Length: 274
Image (cartoon, rainbow, N blue to C red; front, side, top):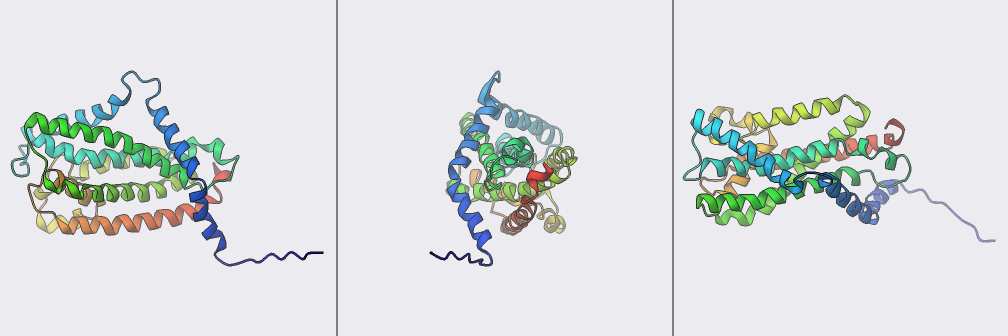
């Protein structure tokens, strides 16, 4: 009779988990595509919502900060393009944060029935928010053509800042997702966080208006470096603020690491709590 031995190796479960992420990649594609279809299903104007939201916000901010407050733009760039270049990463961050934080609760039936790495669900929500970003990005070129403003050659570096925006949203979103499952009242706090973040981020104005002695504190907001990077790539009117970008990279990596660790710690009890 053949003898069977079971060998328990420390850390094996952790390695299997990350391998399962690759094994369940088809589920990741299915959830992402499902969220995209649900977002625009039975809507009056469909994907145009991805254009209207940043466009209307851009108009309001341009009127308030440029016409009323008379804040300066960057170089010769029209103020509308200055705002819209910041709306691109901010809208992506806000949508990804909101969608991912509610993703586990929205998939409660799936979580309680079958096993799969739960990390797939918030990750697919962030990817879904990228669709709105792509639609809005196409509108940017329409605005540039309208104002007769040519994009900067720095656009070749834009994919790097898109990745930075992704990990910023993903890291913060993972942490809030786990908190939202454990404490249900967090779903009321998250919209406040997003709204508050809009006002403390340089969306409607240039970060150059912030006094130098406050810049180190202001740069602790990781979206400052992301927005500065987007504007540098799109407008190319001023030098890249390396301090804000470096701070954004460090904080984004830190948030991603904390978010993954906290999510993995809470993951085992999701099916019971949710």
